Length: 157
Image 1: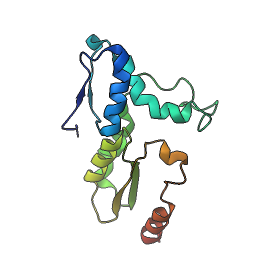
Image 2: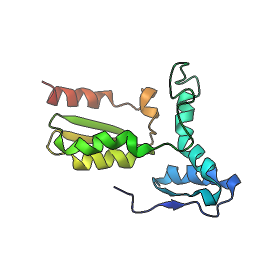
Image 3: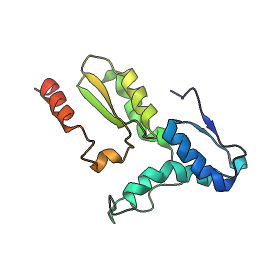
């Protein structure tokens, strides 16, 4: 599913693009119109990668053998390929599913799309207010452990 509203970066000066895209992500944009002829692709990629950098490239989540901590991410990655298998089979999942996602995460639309394709009353989408994707790796103050326990007790008997 493509978002209905996108953020265009045409004619945004290179030195303002990264900040503009970061602010757009913060307020909820998930689609960006960019092209090589705009000469600001690198800045768009930098803004998208920032929350990954804040985790993988700092002591918070760095590990010398981690693909994400080293040269694994490109400036512009192919995010649709990361979620493709889930999208292709989401409607066939019969087991209980709890999707937990930060409402500020760049990939939020992918989780919403997967959830919309799932069938059955044993599926749930839980959004964590103010959280990015990587916040749910280690921010134990916002990870809903009580919700996990309740979900597991209900569906994994």
